[in-house]
Image 1 (cartoon, one colour):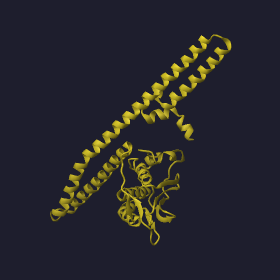
Image 2 (image 1 turned 90 degrees about the vertical axis):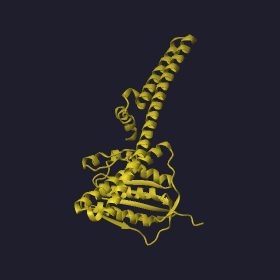
Image 3 (image 1 turned 180 degrees about the horizontal axis):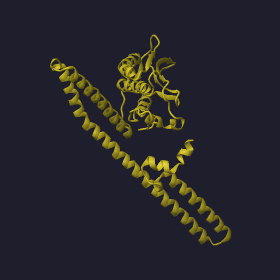
Length: 314
């Protein structure tokens, strides 16, 4: 299936935002056809003509054609790399510019609640609460965009903290309970009595855990079920989130961890998202020395798991 997708020239051109004639798969296919034709011509020329000049000319023509197409491919790759760099720089710049007004809005909201709460009515307090939630969401999105820009540049540095993952899972579960209640989804957390500490970036692993749990809740219908599980597995800790939600179409599962990926059925059920969450989670986990994997069946459910190394006591 992946080979078929790779040979889908129209699809590749659309994804890269280029014309069919600039799609790498088309150019490589064209080069292959030309090489085969040229080699065939050279072969028959050598069979029917004994003149070395004709053979030299034929081989020279083949080299020129291959060089021309190769140069065109390289220029296209350079163009796409430059465009990607500009995009990453713009995202980084825009995100940095947004941090200040978001911080000011957060400060103003907190000031209103802490200093002027007595003079505000219930409706006004509710509105400030909604502003605070929207601001927190925007702050999280800006943080994600900044990390994506750093990942694109290979400049994301993760801390190597000794952390208690049990406490983090409990904190995230508590924070996500209002979402679960609003969605009508039951969330169970299964944790053994005690687990050793792990090595990871505390803030970012907390974001990764929140991404997986909140995703499971959002992609599960009213009356659904989400199970969060922690367990020790040799020299690592496994974290898993399992749901009985909408699942991911099989034909799209190879793109799950790609940047900006949204499955077709997420649009069908009008589930909001940026398509950055799983891309970020995968990079956080792998750069922390862990592994991530998933299983999913459309209309049955999904399970996403990752493992992280425990602290070496030696």
